Image 1 (tube, rainbow, N blue to C red):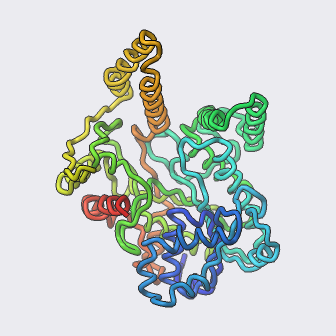
Image 2: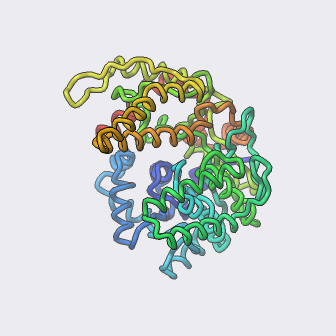
Image 3: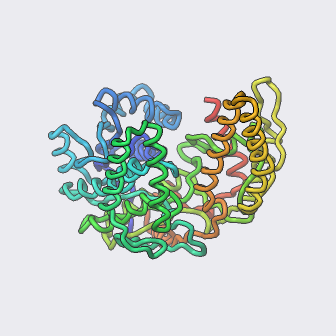
Length: 487
């Protein structure tokens, strides 16, 4: 299989990106505009009430980010006109037919002109409301495929999922697809239409009961966890993403399609510059002295991959599928096979970095960090919580009763925090004790093909073997997180 020139492939192409304001989408857009300014058009689908709101999101949440500083320097005073020429931002909604587009002329243009459709839209909240996650992660995938079928000259559909659709399985997780209705525990009866009906019935019942918005949210979150675990998935996020993959596989027909399954995505490794990241990390809680214990197996492998490598893998996979159409290929993009990293390494890197570069608190004093207490089982965590908090909570409960609910506020606040922590631990437990590695045989074949036949192989690097984890975390990732917090 010959890949030829990536820049030649991207030349004069029209690409639609869903989830246009997301972390990966921004890196993808910046990369394409920087390396191939002759791309014809990037259409970015964003959630917005109207075109004016969509334009505001483009300038404040996408091209206004520091991520685009190299491109701004390259373009100089022509940056704004270049962006206006190359990017069309579209207000839409992935949870509706035709992606929620109301402009019939634009819809017709897209169907006529699109070469590539990249689906990056998703909710990644593990504890999301089930109705929200099902709409976006599962039914959204359906609507994307339906739209792709209307695009006359579409060369490839790229659907970005997550490696963790594998659930809690251990050992080697291979790059296999999910059949429609397949479950992790063998329980039969999984049907997306039934899941949709379950959600509608539950919402109808809650409305009849006069439930508050808060109660509806809680009920929908609980329903998601319940339905996921019924079929063997640990949480709503990976359950709805797995069903999204099923929709793509079942409905794509002859549409050339690939599924990308990244692992845990971290800050950029090289481009457009090292260490660009968005979002709060546990490292910040540790630096501030608020994260004092770790629940999990320190010797377990934590599979992380820099965001720019994920984007490069997406682009190369896109080109490979467009030029050599084959049955749906799944690419798992991670590091656990080629360059494994362990939680013990992260503990060491964090301690050393914040010992040398301590966090300065509000009083202007450095925070002294120590190595966190490690609890390597759920039993040890529950004992810790019982000794540290639950006994205090019980004492407050008794005192509250004795003093006519004088301590009700303190009791309720502590009880809410404990329940929140216990729920988070319950949701994230499978990943704290995750005992699996992600096979990347398809991805490695793609890398080998790129090495031998992609003209710009060095430009589209995605080999985790090239990463020195100590250098990456000490000099790139953690400094990048700290810089993000202070901006």
